[in-house]
Amino acid sequence: NNNNNNNNNNNKSKKDNATNNNIDEEEAILSKDIHRAMSTMTELINTKMAPAAERTGRSQHSLLVKRYREILFDCGADYSKTSAAVARRREARELFRGASTNGSGNGGDDGMEQLMRERNAIDNSTKSAAGVLNQAAGVRSELRSQGAGLRGVSGTMASIASNIPGLNG
Image (cartoon, rainbow, N blue to C red):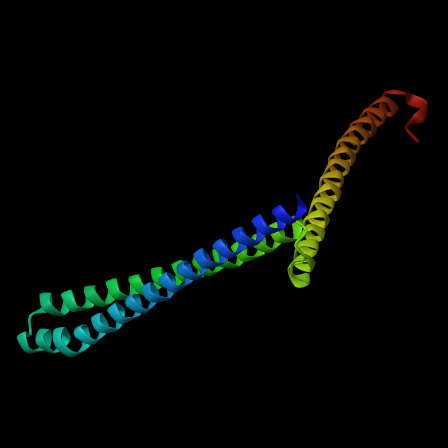
């Protein structure tokens, strides 16, 4: 039965690797297409549109070229953000794939296992620090409340002392 589980896990792992390879290939192709399109657009703006706009001398043509450059810049920024998000997702997928492999007893990657332990230790430390900070905030609030109460008592005692002739000092 254990051999069946290992065979199933190995088959699933091979299928996952094939799917991941297809995704990675598709991502690389799309990335090249986007780079090529942006390069072509930059070239067209700089070599065709801008000179044509200068030749006409009309401000609306220059503004149109400027607008196309802004659009291209925005597309480049969006592409960079999206690429970074995809890279983060890929890293998370690899991390969790390693975690599921380690969890199923397939040996796994020692480095990935160490990262998971480290992440759990950081999470636990963060929770502990948050607990201490919450406790400190509670103590601070309580001390302020007590201080306000003592200041009130001090004023009351001074008022009583001023009303008693022998205690005026």
